[in-house]
Length: 84
Image 1: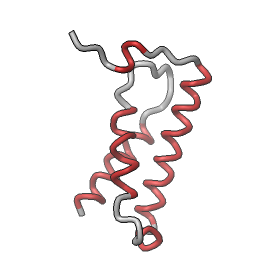
Image 2: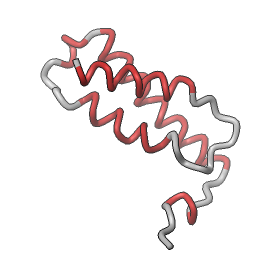
Image 3: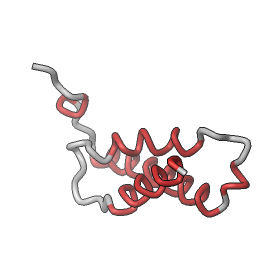
């Protein structure tokens, strides 16, 4: 039986808040890139580098009452922008 990372990782409330804050940093960057893609033209992988980890983070089992809506919305918008 294979155990997932979050099956053995039990973060504290403070660590959960830090993870959520980091996710929101990615959400904000994804939204900024979509709003002004020319400002990020020199960094072609910025969306992928932020969407992929965010996509993994939303499936973590340690979340409590955090609102995943902005994360899911950013993932959807980021993937759409990547696809062109």
